[in-house]
Image (cartoon, rainbow, N blue to C red; front, side):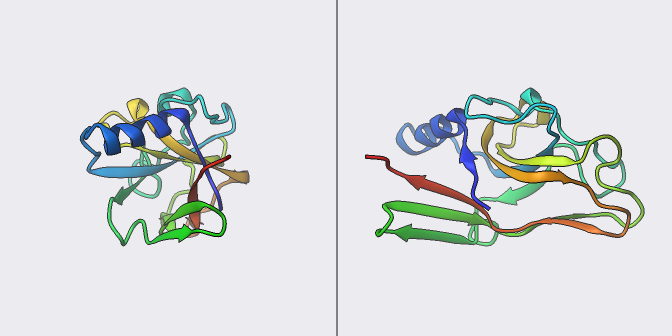
Length: 156
């Protein structure tokens, strides 16, 4: 599933690479509803409506933690025929034995990649993926996002 970078995400990557701004220790994949759809102009998770968290497990506020390593970002590809590079995130699962995901309200319509600021609503949104339909799961089921991909390409 191919995602889109936010303008904030593009700026952050340029800061990290060219200005030596400190990289976040971790990144997060958070789930948001369709109340406000992410766009290239989205800046923070607080600009969106995160799904309701389960208090004892399953979906946690702020999302699923990813380390910046070859396990969590498991595929990076250089594609000279298409003049692009791709990065793919490992499968991201949420499950909880006795509660539904989300705990209440609307299901997840979007997944967003954020930095690791301590307060989830202040986390900067780097990229987003459209899940096409609202997603929710009953107790004992798993919600798994597979093949979240980001593509960098130059348009001439």
